Length: 309
Image (cartoon, rainbow, N blue to C red; front, side, top):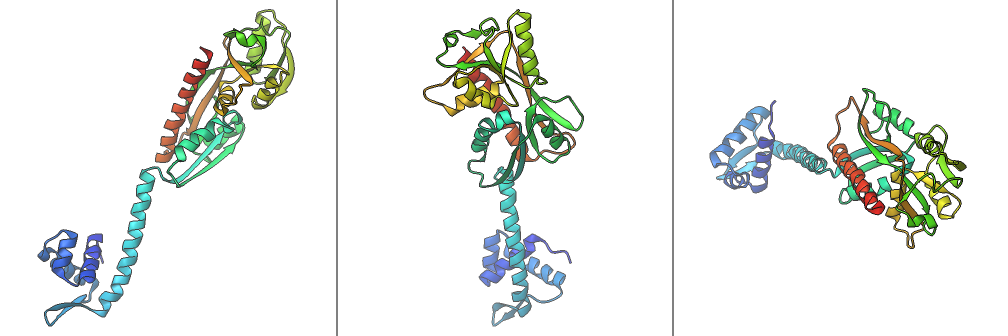
């Protein structure tokens, strides 16, 4: 048996209208074409679907039973078409994102909020993990997109890298906030909040002080810069931190501003990447969000630059 959707749809229209001519108008075909299609369908099925009684087309009992099956097939097909349409419009499916701590609190949720608007059937799994864990989650294809500090290149991961300038964060009412640029000389001997010793920003910051012959005073050692923002706002320390953490403070729009964000010289950088599995085909939804994430990173750079300018 080799039934086509066109045959099934035409048969249903004949059953609904009780007329070959009316069904032909509905499906947009000629009356002889519909008659031939019904005859072919009967040959495929091996039983009669209609008989003519007193000049009227009447369905057989088998036709009524077959109609139930046809309705089920066409209903499922329509649901499938709607689902495919939603997938094509990025309104359905599932997206799994692993994000490092600096971006997970404000930056990533803001972008996802924009992306999910109007996509009620799109399911998202968002977790916060350290960058090294995210690297393994992406390499093993457990997550679709990772946003983390830049790892070493490996064939199991595709990545888009961004080298972001770190900034100096200080209390808004601090006298140094009047300056456009902060140097180690400005912070000579002042209490600093930094990440753990192995982190590149910590080693770069301390090295900058040493090169300029300034005293580097580490008061607080942190795993992420986020709690450091509160310590700085309380006047307990100064901090040279990643751009994303500082940008998160700007997005919160606190009034009055408790922190000042200034350029730090010499330049200290923190590299982050969009990570995707190297041996997997990206879904349409993943590709669309990667485009939005890339735009979000570039917009952040522009807005931070405006603040620094």
